[in-house]
Image (cartoon, rainbow, N blue to C red):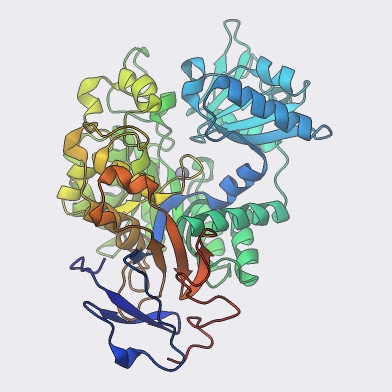
Length: 547
Ligand SMILES: [Zn+2]
């Protein structure tokens, strides 16, 4: 993943960094009396993967709570909620998430189900995409949401025919219910993060962008990092709230100045430009099909977004914008363009994340504005979200421009890979496969969905490594295997270039190294195979390696 996208046959690590790259054979001059030589036996090494948009802490906490991710049916969701409720007979609140909208008619599950399963207690369950919440009647009561509550700006309370809230809340309508839920303790946030780091290492991930930071989350990172348990480069994008306006910039600066640990920096700001297409809350240039002129809403007006972006940029922040609909993407580009006009040239690398539906004329703007395109490639196939909840509401003409990774790559823009976990799996390998195949990774080989928008293996590997490193200003230290860079490595069981793309999602991570230390080792590996040394035998570690 150097600029030439070279392939090499050997590398040497010293003091946690890559000391040498050998293209053909091992150079004996690099082997000293205490050097451990590890023969990979034809296995495959890449720079550690980097996730350019992920929610480690909240997703880890979600796993510890009522975890509904990957439920295959509404019955399975109900059974899992029933188990959670039974396991916590004394809790006033049942909290969790991960349910998929397509499992329920119109993505709209009813409160009566939760009332029954939880015996009338308060229940709050966020959807897998995080943009809807399913709540019980008691939760609505505690949140003060009733038939007479109007829909808030940029939010929707789903309702029964009589106007009573039916139990599904969208976007900003979730906020009163979120506020009613008792916040997780610092210990629980740290426990969630610990779980997330463990999962990340198992997937070969050594760097992340925390895509929705706030002070309690930063404190969790700091606690783990100080305990020496983080082993992950973290760039936090701290969330700016629409109601906070320009007044919150001082607070964002205070958080940026905080000491959150040696691996953590809070140098970016997260802005939600809009919602999501599957709930028809993404902001479109033209109306959704069959929704009476509704075209979704921007969370910030174009003018307010521009104003905030200019001020944040003036103070040196990086922008990280959630932009899904074509109108939100345009508003984000316009804001970045206004920033450059107002504040002059600077290496800013604004990140636009999710970037689902484009007006085609906006596609070259990443390249023109020096912005990073953070795609979540695992979303780019015709699943039920696309087939049932997206394409019918966009029509065929616009749907051609869903996740145009190929077109964006052809402009020469930098692509960054990301998962948005727990929205979808943190595992980069299925995402890499889908970027190439644009098919369900579990399906048989066949024609891609929107074939013009597939990318090749080199392009998508770069997105998950050097591209994501660039998007978080860490490309001088990480993202490629070059002398001087940190030895953040992932060992895979197969050469990705030697197998059909449809097998990539089955490839296994065998070992993950962070700055030369083994942070994950496949428990199935026999002793002595890929023996990089461990904490008790720190051949590669920063402290003791002398050759
Ligand atoms: Zn996200």
